[in-house]
Length: 297
Image (cartoon, rainbow, N blue to C red; front, side, top):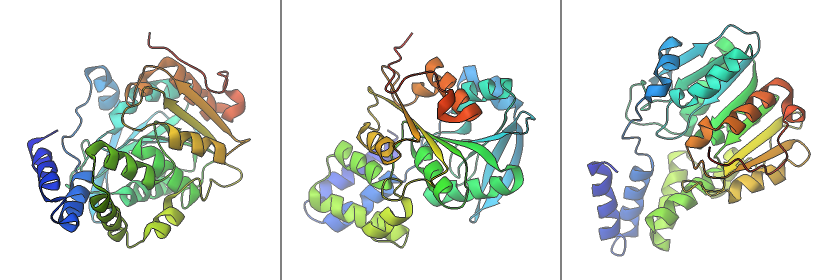
């Protein structure tokens, strides 16, 4: 945790009992902290450098978009909070080898994109912008917070026949609850934090759920879903992912892995195989059974 974040956390704990309102405001500031920026892994540098790049304006900010391959079928990849597009490098290589065209981006204040502030709306706006220039997308893949963005985009303005949510959740409430649990926020502070989160979007709790909850408002009937979650994921427990799978019964495939955690799941061979098969022919093409366990090699 960077020094600035530690200072904010100290302020939350110092003011929580005296002023839940101030502590809630500080908690929201910490929740939306994007630093430190993730570096490109050495193993992913070649793929990162091989991309065609473009700077695209969105919502008063700017993103760096990436493109690989020349196939007719396009896949959009959406990274998570404090992540970057290069995390998908192993998947990019697999998809391009199978003849797909792959599109991704670094959200504002992430990766190579400028800026200091961002939220879920930027991810969705980026997907809308790239849909106009590079779509339609046969599949949208999202990791963690990007999985929520992928679900939101596919439910609203960026329709796609297939969505894969990896190490993700169905709604903002799951991310807020995990943040509250991790920081051990007092109930009064947690309530203020949640209120301020909704106020940022101009919505109350019910409005947030209506706009961004893929269990309460599932994907369109013609959209298939792949849910991938590791049992050892400490960043985002799998409870909400299981709810998401259940809400799409009959058109969702659940893959549960063991030992990969929150980020390494993106590099796991069984996961890569499942996502590529899903992009190719949907859930019918995935050889892995429901709740497959994939051990760390």
